[in-house]
Length: 433
Image: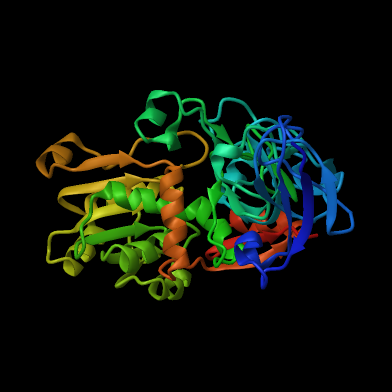
């Protein structure tokens, strides 16, 4: 049985389902005998050929494939930590990697810059098993388009041109008990992007086809980037607070990269009443994000175990305190201040990881914990399913990151601002070069 392999350019206006994302694609069709010369579905063709083109291959079935005609360079620009332990980055040229089995190659256009990246770069996170090495590519909030598929990626459903994201946990094993329990965000064998693997401060990166986060085409890439870490992290934390619509929740660090997103999700997406706590300079952002009340933490004593602060919160919450508090900042003092602000059966959710030597929560007295039946819980970075749900919130207009865009070359200055606490909202890198 003989048949033909044919290729032709399909424009979006002609057949939208064969040209997703408004990008012209090549349509491949073949029929015939018994040999599979392309090693199953999902292979990537980088072609500079006249179309229509007709070739003959014997093959038993009829298939349709989509390809984006795009050049993949041999080298790319990347920002690396050149002097770990200090605030310093350097732009270098690196080889563009080739996807292995189960992997896809992503052309990144944007990457968020997170406080966690600062901790990894400066080696101030004592929880990490080894210090960051010179030449490490940081970043874990990358968004781009799939440009090449490795072998054995058919089951993922990904195709060339799909918009996807790389988040903090770049890959999981899928076999450990947390993964089997649907808690892949705390997989025992997780790989952290920008620490265990090259991160997203580069123009091309690899990702597991089964674990990258699909990004709605309608969502701007720069806007989506911070949501891959900050957005999904606070969404998961708010769910773990068990606060119900109409109840009070305190967001500590409410004007920061995580905090302003937590305020939006809590108030606009989950029906919670929000009290935002931060420095006075961030009041505008916090109120704009949906907080009902704002508290300038600098106006309260630091040495009274939050007694004055608790009294003020009680005056705003029927005299009882908040039902939950989510600490998004990385300050030890914020945890000690948050606990006394809770009412009976209240929940403190720990999100921000303090740097340097770990400290216990200074106000977590057993008598108070028992008497008010307070719960303290941790919340990591969320699951892949929660990341997808977070993107849906954003696509519906409920969640919108407050961010500014900088070039890759400005990364060191961005980290300096972050180190000094001067960043409002998020910073997103334009990786287009």
